[in-house]
Length: 423
Image 1 (cartoon, rainbow, N blue to C red):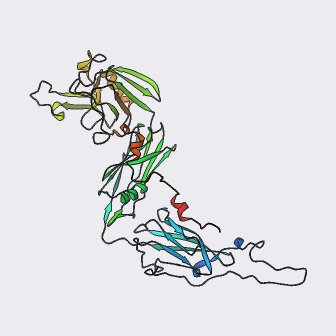
Image 2 (image 1 turned 180 degrees about the vertical axis):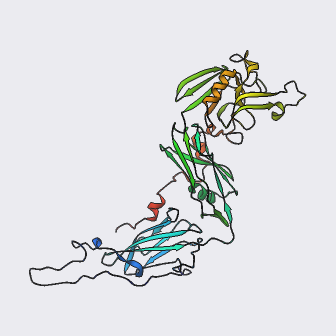
Image 3 (image 1 turned 90 degrees about the vertical axis):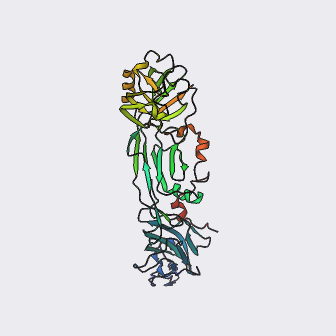
């Protein structure tokens, strides 16, 4: 504390000392507190018993780059500290074994108001309490890290990942851990899940298995005012809330030329289909519906086919559910009805009759699962061409987190309220 300025309030102690009253041999001494227990007494004002390094002057603000420190006089000790900011975020901290000093172990947020409740006891065990309040400064030189959470609030299928797009790259693992701890995903019912760093500016979150049907997923960021790295501070972000519909999974067996649609693990419909022919084989793996269009113009040039090629095409396609950014759809293909259920003749999409395609389009929603098996095509990429997140097993997915395997540990509330063990 050699470079910290500590502030102490005026003396207002109101503890009444014990007085021995001997009225007669039949009357014993009167103890402090209730029933002789000093801890049952009303807490005294501990302002004169503690010192702290935050400005007491309302016109001055604390430096968020410095930890909060609270110390006790030699005639007392700190028993408990709870520090919370205006957003309800607890400040983690540690109390040393003898109760003489508490210090924050997580960074103070910038540009916010803190309320700190300090509990103490004096040499006789009488309890004291003091509530401290102070504001933190906003750094003059900084970049703001904005987080765009996705998808938009709404109802989705059980395969929809949560996304976080950062406005600035975050490369350092320690900085990534700060970001990841601040991105909160709460689910009802509760499920295990984890963030995965796709790149320096993109994170995805998913549970170990698909989301439960009819779950509620609430996503928000606690980064506002938090220092992420040198000159980079978190900004406000808009929360999102997802609900999931029924568990709807469409499995396409490319070798059998058949799609089976399951709803809540029960077969809903089986559909004769055609998938990609040799050279245009449909990708194997788990995909997520990323868009739906009643009509879309499809051209061979978008997938690298020259207009002079015999494979060239340019046509309107109806009832199209998109599963990759590169242009793979499930859609109506009335021109290939004779091959559906028997052969694969498409350029990579999954085609079916107009009636089946219309039904499929009306049945599925964004975030529903489309899985392709037994195709000669490549495996679906986990990232970069839609949501292939589910193609990573859970062990590999967990390694994409910046947090150590044993996190989360004690909650910030538990750490902030940490007491020394009794000797």
